[in-house]
Length: 236
Image 1 (cartoon, helix red, strand yellow):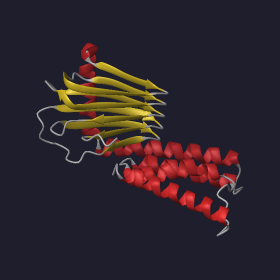
Image 2 (cartoon, rainbow, N blue to C red; image 1 turned 30 degrees about the vertical axis):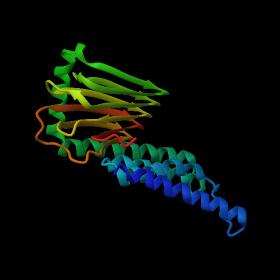
Image 3 (cartoon, rainbow, N blue to C red; image 1 turned 180 degrees about the horizontal axis):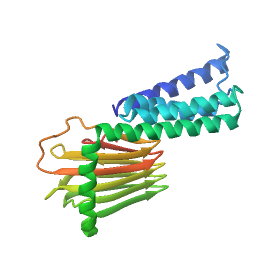
Image 4 (cartoon, rainbow, N blue to C red; image 1 turned 45 degrees about the vertical axis):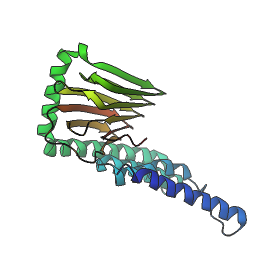
């Protein structure tokens, strides 16, 4: 799914170029700066996320917020009403996420939470990666990986573990706020994830996820308006 994102954005940019060129040459007249045109920066990423990511509830929430603001900009109803409806959408989306996670991921979440609690008791061996309004890459090359605390706030972090050495099960605590985290794992390591996002989510882009690896990486992912991607290949 990861390869679909640049294709979608490429098509959108090409369409924008055609509109600008057609307007300039007089082939047609399309005004893209309509009332509320800025809401497309909310709606389009939401649609892309809906197509490519697994967290459909939050993607739908993004789209709903964009559409509500667009209708307000078009004077269908006032912004006062719009913000109240957005709050309602937000609460419904969070509630649905809790229900879905409780029904379908409860056992897995409990297992990850238990491993995270155990790791925190011996957290001195875990490294830390932090990016704020910037980007950082951490590549393990024949180094022992004992776990990591990763945070991206208005920035990006890439944690490359493909050539790391594993001597035990490990834990990654990942937090993304208006940022993104890419975790690249070896193909022969299992991954178990616990996710708690508000208007954001995670994407598992591994080509051949392993369920028979000797070691397991337990990922506790959380944040808001951000995303975490797990893959077994560096596509960047």
